[in-house]
Each structure stands twice: as structure tokens, then as C-alpha cells.
Length: 231
Picture 1 (tube, rainbow, N blue to C red):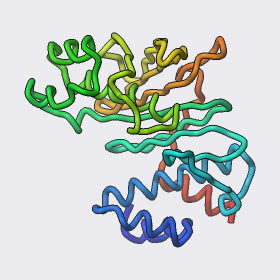
Picture 2: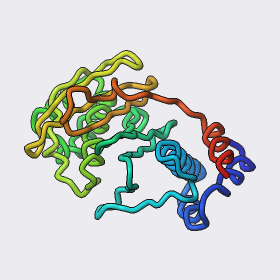
Picture 3: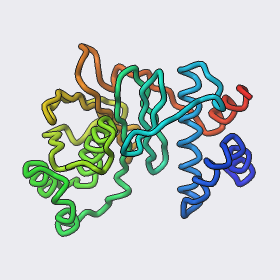
């Protein structure tokens, strides 16, 4: 989007929200923050049937955004912003291999504290560390968003185990793991050659996982148009 479209879209936010966007240190991060907030407003407004300006958000003790009547989770990637919407708690994360291209053994060792012994051995021995790291990280981050603690978590204790590294685009892998005494369903899908989206949810129903989500792809302009139509 050009500067005119950016400025036009910014007017859909409150002054406080605009300030938060502009505090990002680069144009790219500002645009991603703007897209994240617009998607959040559009998603919650559409599900709840409430005008965007009338939505009342709150935050959990660790900063997780919340709203009465639905559960949602947000994540920013290299080229996409994603939102998971559910009737029960859900965590979603998008990770990109471009963030970790060329991971040497020494570089991998810097992340030793966030992986279990088996995960770290698997990662260290892999010839496709960028793919595996992105997949594992997206799953762990999705779980942290599910429980609402973010990085205030013992990440190493989130044992996601062994999952297929290579998936065709849009193919879904779903696994279940017991973490902190709860059965958690993880589902992952590569949406591009470099970006993977994972969800995490507590397993309380027979049907769960990303394959049961209705996936809607939206352009920034379509979100802006939808929000403008509500004003």
C-alpha cells in the first residue's frame, strides 16, 4: 500500500492506536501493526455483529487481547497477518523460514534453552533447520498464546514432539500432546513456501484442529473497505 492508503487506513483507528502503530521502528513494522489491528477489528466486528468503534477489548494479565463473546488470537508473519477465531480458547502463530535462513550448528545452539533434548537433537541433525525451526517455533508460540502467557513461559517444557517437516502447501498435520496435564491439539499448515501457520487448542471435542477452521484470505484493501462500510 502506498502512503496515501496507509494514511487513509490509519484514520480507522483511534488516536491511541495510531500512536502505537507509529511507534514501530520501520515502515514495514508499522504496516504490519496497522494490518493486525484492522484485521482484529474486522474479525471481531463480523463475528459479534458490533460496529468496530463499539468493540470493547480488554487484556489478560500478560497482555493477551480479549473480548467478551468470542475467543481470538493474532500473529504477524513476514508477509501475512493471521487471526484465529473460535468459541473456545485458541492460539495461533505464523513463522517464516526467512527469519532463520542458514542456521549453523553454533547458531542453533543459541536456542538450546527453548527445546527439549529430543527436539534439539532433531533440529541439530536436520539438513533443513530453517523449516524445522519455523515449524517447532510456530507450534510452541501458538501454545503460549493459547494459555495467554506469551514469552512468560517455560518454553522448553512445551514438548511438541516429532512432526512431519515437509508438507505440501495447504496440507495439514494435526498432532496431540499432553502439556502441563492438558491434552492439546496442534495443527500446522504451510500457507506459502516460507510461512507456516500453527494453531493450538485444548482437546475437549471430537472435532478440532485447523482443518476444521473456515479459512478466509483477505487483502488489506478488502478489510479497509469492510470497515469503512460500517461507519
